[in-house]
Structures are given as C-alpha cells and as structure tokens.
Image 1 (tube, one colour):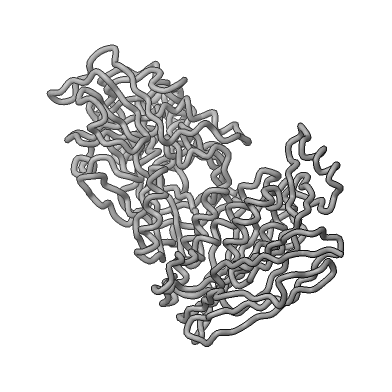
Image 2: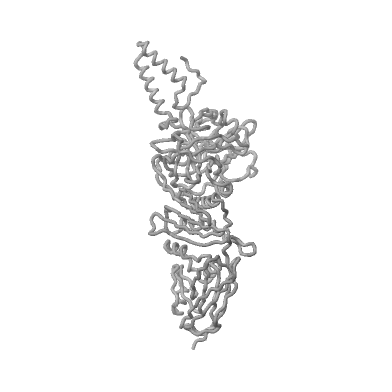
Length: 638
C-alpha cells in the first residue's frame, strides 16, 4: 500500500492508516518468505522507535529541534485538549524566529490552525501546548497576538526550557510581570496584507494604543484560574489581585477527583492554590515529560522562582469563545505531584512528590448557630494571607452574614519550628452612623497579622495551621470615653491618685470605671500628665514618645508585640513622668541616671533611642472603646 506524500502523521503516533499498513506488511511476511530478513528487522526497529517516541503516551521525546534550525514556511503540529482529557492536534506554520527578543532568549513566531482555533483564536489554558516539526519537539505555545483574524502565537523554544529538569533549587528571579521587551525586526514580517517591523513581548497590562500600529504585540496567554465555591462578592475581590499576574479567575464547578487524565505532552495540568470547602486551581498544558518530571506553560505562572505548589491533572468541560480572549473551562483532578520551579520560560514539576501546604479551620459563631469551614492552601508569603482573607470573607457570606457586624476575633497560628502557637485576639464593633470615627476593618486584620509573620526579616517561617474563630453580632458594642476625673489635683510622691473613667456605651446608660495610680516616691516638683484613651490613640502615642518600644529586633520580640498588642476593648491609662531611660534594640532600660542617658543617646550606634518614663495599665471592658482625654497633676515634693 502506497502512503500519500501529502499525509502527515503525528510525531511518534501510529495513525490508523499506518497500523493497517503495518498489519498488511506483517501478513505479507507470513505469505512471502522471500522477503529479506533485513527488511523485517528494519520494520520492527521502526515500530519500536515509534512506540518509544510517542509523546502522547508520556514516553520521553529524545529528539528536539532548536530555534536555529527553523525556517519560515516549515509546518508541523501542536497538541492540546479541547474537551475532556482527549488530546487533539492543530496545524502549525513557522513564520520566523525572533532572536534575543529578551535577554538570552528567543521566541518562535507561528500561525496556528484547526477547526476550533479558527473560531476562537488562542485560548487561555493552551499555555504549554507542545509543537512538533518532523516529529521533533520545538517548544511550547506561550504568547498570543490579539486583535487579528489569524491565530498568531509565540512559542518558547524547548531548548530554553530543558534546564529546569535538572534544577532542584532556585531563588526568586527579578520581577518578570510588569515588564515588556521590544525589538525592531531585521526584515518586515507579512501577516495577511499587513507588514510589521517591530515585535513586543509584553506582560504589562497596557492597552494596544501604547504601542505603534506597526508592532506585533505578543502577550503571555492568560492562565485561567478555576474558582469553585466562592461567592460573587469574593470573586470581585480576587480579580485585581490575580490580574497583576496575568491570571484570569473563572467561576466553575471546581474539583473532580475522578479525572484520570495522565500528565503527558498536550494534557491538562493544574496548579492548585486552594482546596477544601472552596477551590482555586490554575490550568495549563504539559509540554514535555522525562523521568517523572514535567515542563508546562512556556511562560511564568507567578514568576516566583523556587516554589512549592500542588500539581494536579485535569479535564476540559468546555471552550468558552470570546472576542477579548477565549478560555478553557476546566476541572482540576487529583494531586499527582508538585510544582517546584516557576520561571520566565516554564513551570517545572515532579510526579510523586507533594507540596507542603497550610491547613486552616474557620469557625463562625452567631447567637443562633455555629458553622465550620476547612481549607488547605499553598504556603507563600504573598498568596497565603490573600487566600486566608478570601476564605474568611467567603465563610462569613456563606453563613448568611456580612462583614458589617461586631466581631470577637481569635486567631491561632502554628509554625512548623516554633515552640508554641501564636495566639492573637481582638474585638471589633460594627459602625455607628452617628459616630464620626471610621469603623475598624476587622476582616483586614487577619491577613495583615499573618503577613507580618510570614514576611518578617529575621527568619523563614513555615505555617502549618491557622485556626480562626469569629463570633459575630448584629449589635454595636461601642462605648465613648465621655470624661475622666481624679480625686486630687495636687499630690506628693508616694501618694495614690484615684481615677474615674465615665463611659457612654451605645444604647445603654453611662457607666463608670475606677482605678488607682501610684505616684513614684522619687518624683521631683513639677507636673505630670494622665492620658486615658483607646487602643489606636495609645499606639500612636507610643510611636511618638517611645519609637523603639514597638520595633522588633528579633522574631521572638515580633511575636511578643503581636500577642501583647493593645486591644480595641481596652482602655489605656498612661501617666507620663519627668524622667526617662533608653531603648536598646527594642528593650526598655528605664530609670537610668541622666548622665548615662545623655551618653548613650548620643551614641553613634543605631538601635538606641530615648524612652519616656511612664506608668501604664490597661483596663479591659465589654465594649470597643473610642476617645482620648488628659489631665495635669501637680507634684509637690517635701
């Protein structure tokens, strides 16, 4: 049987026609013993090679074609999934190679064609789709050119991607997102009836008007992030954050553990950011596999360098066409490995190894019921606080509540290598229209506290578990400090001053709190000031008078500051004294002789600051307190 010269077979795959032909040849061997032994041996060797070089079955491709070997007009095939887990092919025509389009990097320009792509253009989720010329892998579809009737793509050369397979460690690279590379073409490039003399590889969110009309602008193909279980309000919070990384959140059905697709070239690969009661999973395409390691995407995911992210298989539910950018609607499958590298040219993963993740339990309590939500998220100093914030908001909204509530918050953070859990508690009240004070944004407090721990400058931390308990109430729990009184305006050293604090709770009668303040026995004649204020004013006062007090110089000190921080339901009573001390690396040294304070304050060493002498105490209340008052007391020494 004669094979048509115009028929092109998939690289390494035996077509139905070829299988029938080989069956006929084998039959011929049985009935024609005169066939030479060398011909039979050649056929068997060819069959073995074709089976060993079948990229669709996950066997390693041993032949590559470098960008230097490519010429305009060469044709080949690419592979990706358009439905389910079935790998489909599309035609590829090489338009040219853009040399050094970015530092030490080339880009292959090609035209793509098949029945689907002709209708949709490039599809978000195709990133990583392998492209073959004469059965040799040349690279991964990674960049797209919008606003054109033809499907023009930028292909990342495979020779630049292969180094990731041998790298086990790495550091965060220079920021890739937010940059673009532009270069004049040595010869104008004709696409249809238009000619272009400049190419721009762009990862910035700049409109096309920012570039000349004679430029081809190739943007990294957007990576769809499948969003499952989140309320629309939370999705709105996500979009600007994901957009900074070229990620496109899409509401979908979420997780499907029954997906059986193998991670082979052209298959769907997922990067799982969050699982549990909600899911976030990015979707792309596998480019190449070797010895249990995979390459995918052909461009950065988040440009984080060394990463530790769960890797899943997946399937495609549908292709959603769009004039702006079509995308694959996918479902992530089971976790089958981990992504360890996220670089300019690809992401790199390994099967059978699993990422370390952070578990989180969020309990929402009201007067009527209690609900619990469980999540597992990636460990990353940028993403973990954001993910926790979205999970917290979603848990509240899913409980039929809103964030415009009074809240009692307790957060327990357990680190992998720290002696004990970090426990942080606070109280917040819903806003009162009659009050001028801005409401305390308690929902922003949780990620803020977590971020301060994960981004600390003293040591790396690995967050194993985060438990958050929130008790919500519709009732405002605020109280204003109306006035303060003292039982004497003139005191002697060693006396006690009895202080009365008058509060006006919202919707309740006035109430008075009392406390006694001791006057130090060694005070000289003069005046001292009593301040009675809420937590926010007290923190500002500390920053102004004792700037080194709340400055951490070690991780242990940072934890102390977070755990011992002033709470919104506390009244701060502070008696400032006409004596002081110094702070050394955040440690207070009060009551030093004046001469020593003068010497140390003029030190040429950093980390030393003046300390204002004071007596302070905190008075807990049942309300979120606001207001600040002060009184002056005369001291008359004997």
